[in-house]
Length: 168
Image (cartoon, rainbow, N blue to C red):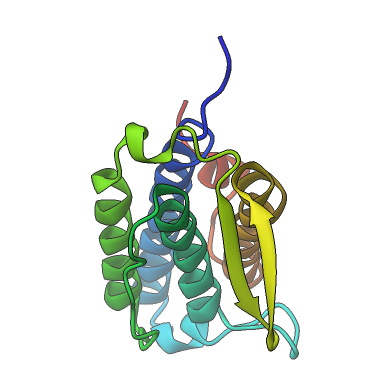
């Protein structure tokens, strides 16, 4: 049995966003227990020239919803990118998961050869659906979730590899 485009995308996004949500719950609890201003975590970075935690989560959710919409040939939901608290970031993740759950397998499957055009850095980049998912979206999605994890771990939140991977 071959892996479908739907199987390689939507369930992966939903699972990892769920894991990210659980990690954020631990970060919020850590901040509360230790009387740390949550904005310290929300604005933390791995390096000075990298985006803060809030932006990492915004980009991860953008990758997931953008990919699902482009592969399904539907409109991408727009978000304001104004989240600055744990509850707001959790709401963004939940909103993204709700959108992903609304996309049906029939909309995604068969999109391997669909042309996907992105406008980046003042130019258009064209992909076919499968390389767009496998070579562009998934690496970016995992990069931003991993970076969010690393920011929180570096700042003392008690999370480990199993938090990232999640339950099996």
